[in-house]
Length: 141
Image (cartoon, rainbow, N blue to C red; front, side, top):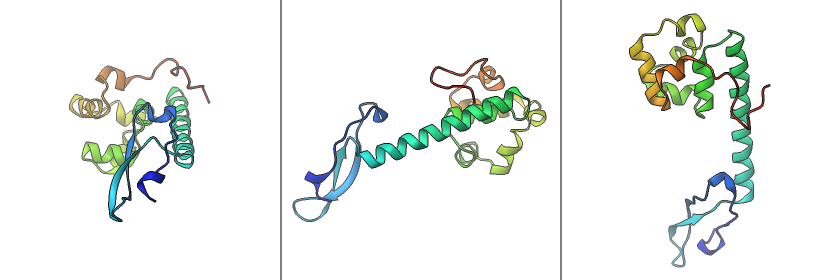
């Protein structure tokens, strides 16, 4: 695609930001160009966000039922997944999944809880508990 053909279909999903893509410049070489997005990409992003929000709602309900720890909900609410959280924590994925078990999560050391909280930008107290209700825009499953 040529630089002057890069789509510019702005959408709220980018929150006013642009992103850089590669395109062919006038000299025939690859160059960078800014874009506000294009319809196909925007729809794919919206679908992905909807999916992870649904997973967060389901995790919230499981945590309310005592089937998982608040960690799973907070991970998904922060738009992380197990591989990303494992990498950020320097742990194996199975260790992260193990911490989803309420009895294991409740025995985690303060140091480990602080690590999780730091990675997710939360306080330890927030990490340890589940919100009473979901935030606006998040409906219960």
